[in-house]
Image 1 (spheres, rainbow, N blue to C red):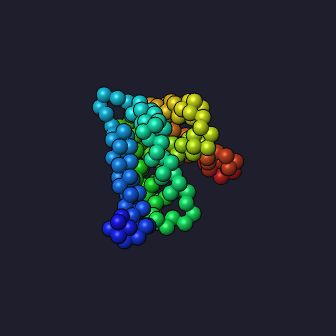
Image 2 (cartoon, helix red, strand yellow):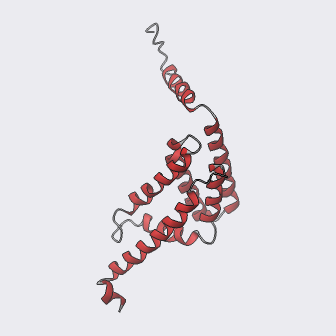
Image 3 (cartoon, rainbow, N blue to C red):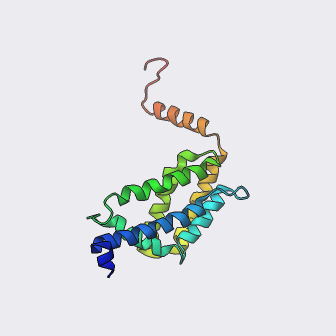
Length: 168
């Protein structure tokens, strides 16, 4: 009966995945929303706890398998959208601490730790690593980003062994 309604097995599976993905976006998106009474790193910490907890793990398992599928026949562009869907909410949240430019880094760390957690099941270690990372984000947000970038640029130029003022 369901196949008749959806036409094919793949169409049925795409509909189920689409509905589950929308629920994940709604739930996780709300978790990443800026709260005026909470530092954004605390928001990220609370989101991590939910995402890696019993209510978030089913989504991670389902979409992790879809992302890792070599064929990608059910959702051909899933890997791309599974990345870009989260950059906007993270940029918005990180803007509250003056660092929307960290969205890609935060997403990459979250994804890496989720893969680690999936492979090892070691919640204690991955939770500690995420807390340590949040401490780094707090440190980055409290410093003067523009002077840090200028220092990195100077350091990069200084490693060439050429003094640009004297041409040596």
